[in-house]
Structure formats: C-alpha cells, structure tokens
Length: 489
Image (cartoon, rainbow, N blue to C red; front, side, top):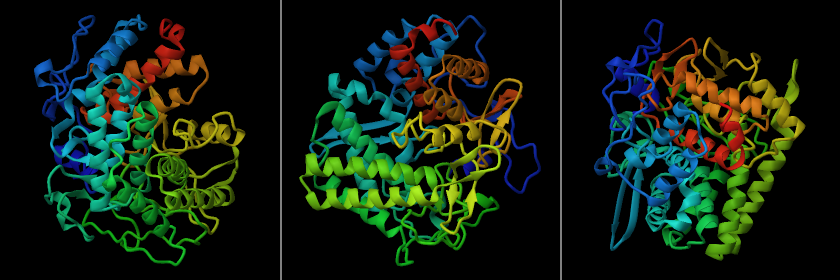
C-alpha cells in the first residue's frame, strides 16, 4: 500500500470521503519494532534509549556506534542528544534485510511501517552512513548490496517507485497499469530514478569501491537514461499508463497517468511527486533539477568506472537539454516575491506556485547539489516557500513549516523543518528549527511523517525512517561545523 492508504487503513487518517478531522492519536497504532510504544511519552528527565536491544537490531556497524559517541559529546542538551541517539541509527536498527552469499551481497531497506522498499527512501535513509563506509567493511557490504538491489529494481520496472523483497503482487495488484511480480507500487516519480544514481555516486566517491558496478548496474544505468529520454516525450509518446480505483484525488494522475497536456520543451514528465501524490502539471521543477544533477553524476560514473563513452555523452547531453529548458520555463513572476521557481509547469506558461515538504522540493535544491544557496533566484524562492504565500506553509502554537496535500492540509512535516535548517546559514534560524523539532516529537524520541502544529500529539507514522535519518544527518553536520550552536540550544 502507499503511505496515504496505510494511514487510512490504520485509522490514523480519515479517507478522502470521510469527514474531518483527519487525524487520531496514535494510541490505536501498534508499537513499532523501533522501541517501546511510541504513543507513550517518557517522563523527563528519563531519556532512556528507544533503540531495540542489540540482538534485535537488523544491522550493526561499529563505525556508526563510534559516530554516535563522537556527536553526542558535542550535544550538551539532554533531550536533543536523546533524539539523535534514537534517530540516527534507526534505519540500521529497524529496516535492513542483509544477506551475503556466493552471489554477492543483497540489501533490502523498508521505509519503516510499510514493508516495501522505495528507491527514494532507501537512498535517503542510508546516505547519512556513506561517509563512514570507508572505515567499516560491514557498511561497504551493505551499500554494495543496496546498489545492486536498486539496479535490479530499475531493470524490473523503471516506472515503479516501490518494490518487494520477493516476486509477489501486493495490495495494488489491481491498479490499471503493468504490474509485475515484485512491484509494490507503479507510480512514475521522476526522482525515483535519480536517487539510486546519487547513492552509487556518493558511495564511490567516499570509498573508491568499484565492486557494485557490475553488468547489471551498467544495464540499469542505460535503462535510466533511456527512460528519462522517453519521458521528455518529444515525439508525444510514452508507454506509461496508470489508474487506480480510489476516493483520494491525488492517487490518480490525469489521462491514465500520462498527465495533463504539455508543450514538449525538453523537460522530463513526472506523473507523481515524491509525496506519491499526482502532479497537476507534469513538469515537476525540483525533480527536473535533481535529474540534471543525477545525470551529470551518472556521466562521471560512466566515464570513470564503466569506461562507457557513449553513455557519458548521452548523460551530459540530456542534462544540458533539461538545464536549458529549466532556464527558459521553470521560473515565473510572483506578485509578492518577484521571480521565483514554480513547483510545476506545463511548458504553455501555466505554473503551480507552492512547495511540498517531500524531497526533492524547491527548498531542498542546494542540499541536493542542484542550485547555489546564495543565488538570488533561490533566495527569493526559499523566502516564498517559507511564507504564508506558499499554500502549504503553516504556523501553529508549537512550530511552523511546510506540509503538503498528502496527509492533511494543515499538517507540518518535520522533513521541511530539517531541510530549512540544512539550507540555512543563519545560526538563529537553525537553532529555531532545532527547538521546533524538540517541541514536536510528542515525547516519542523519533521524527514523524507529519504533525499538528497546534497539538503535536496528533501525528502520522510513528516509524518513518527517512525523517529519522535526515534528522541524524542534520545533527552530524552541526556537530562537525557548528558545535557552538549546539551548546546554545
């Protein structure tokens, strides 16, 4: 099931047909394997670990444990230190299935409370550990297995966003699309093909290890480029179609997955956003920026590892085409903020002016290596995204941040608060973000998918490993670059 349907089935969020309010307390949600029942706050100052016992952890790494100790030594605030020790290792503690045999390593990473692997989430959950891989052979084995597993997923179906560990058909087998055994969900999300490239590139740069880049990975790399070219739809054609019987509007992209009409300007179409919600206009601007970055990184891997000059040329040529199209079509005039990036466009001049908490987002462009953080166009876009002019920016008693239509219109996603801190150079802004995160974890010791900014005890997804990893990444960076700030929180 997708995230929205999981919440509906679990009773955490009402269906689109049901009356509001959309959220219930998590008292009805079963405890996750990540620790004690997450709806029961600890009694301060008893910040006892919410990690599972060592014997129950799904993967262990000496380098990660050492890093936890290093960072904790720079966090004097007890609750902030407790949050870090719970969140940073949560992906390894609870979401990994790792096997090593004669056929090589294999790593499957579930997203948390949904037993499927998203290409996006599995990358975002584990990237925080990549810098440690050079000094930990177990981590290198984990990444070799994940890089190979992601390549197999791409070869199984480059249009699918989430997969099972085994060749099975799940809850969405009745979707009107080409569902293959092993595919959990087949929502075409442009960023899904970018994230595996980013993981492979980051791993290679950190370790120099060429072992995962076998013939299967080479084939997947070619498939990625071919799919992105196809989804430029310069000839108007796409093999992709998708329809779902659902009362939730965002589960269906218009025209059976093809999307609303576009002028073919060189941008790449996406049927769905990183939130798994459908695009209103098929050119999703943050994901197209991300594709440019990923294609250039893939071109480097093609040259340095695969020794495939043709693939390198294809990557760089496609990246240049998309970048040129972004320069021409991705920005528009806002009546308050001036020229900013749109969230989605169609090439005809129509634009959707908003930002969503899920990554890639407009806010996240510098963090993804897509745009300079000090560029005036990005600064104006950032100011828009973090203002009431963004229809999905919300303020409440305990926090302010960006949400999206995926859960409920007034819910804030911690991802957006974390990304705000990651893209800020202002110590006061970063400290304010940390204080909001401290106020809104509802005593659980973990990040959530979303929360009510007026009542953080109302939240969705007690076990959301992507956000836990992102919080861990923020804390590691601050410990390395702004330890004095941590002492002030």
